[in-house]
Image 1 (cartoon, rainbow, N blue to C red):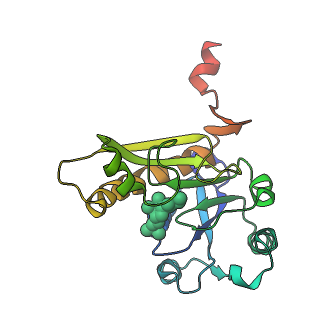
Image 2: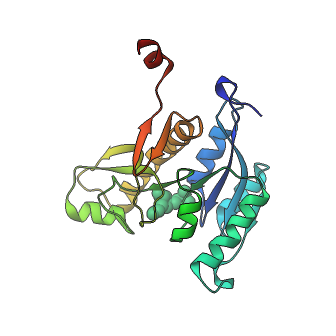
Length: 217
Ligand code: GAR
């Protein structure tokens, strides 16, 4: 399959643990034949994850393994990696995959694995980001798509989307506003990475030179 500009479409897996609304946004984007990534697998560590049924309904292959069946984080991650290899996966999107991935897995997928976090990193890493943002009294909040490095919710930023915090917001209201942004920025970030327009260089995100830039040089 070829994508925009005739390049190969990156064979992409989405890893989820729950409802999978970001997964849906990614699947919608990847359904376009000129999108530079194609969805080949949705994987979950929880067989009951709601997003699995959505993926199956969209005709995407699914797989599950329970982390409880493995003696260590890395043992589980090696089993996940074998599943990904079996589907010829080239790119990984973590989308509400509520597992800390092992350094081994991070290293193996370095530069080819991205994730979304519901906060403007580096603020509010970890859980309960919306309640913590309200508690801190910030006026802007949002979401971040980043490359995954072996650091929880860290890693170089690819794209961020911000939303205002309103008086009277509750964590749920704020979460809904942020989630809308997540669904916009995650497909855009995947397109940037899968098309090679941006890439990881050490611990920084760099943009590939455009044709215009080459002509100017
Ligand atoms: C999303 O808000 C995502 O940003 C967050 O989990 C939610 C999953 O929702 N991820 C993290 O907190 C990762 N640190 P979804 O299953 O509907 O996409």
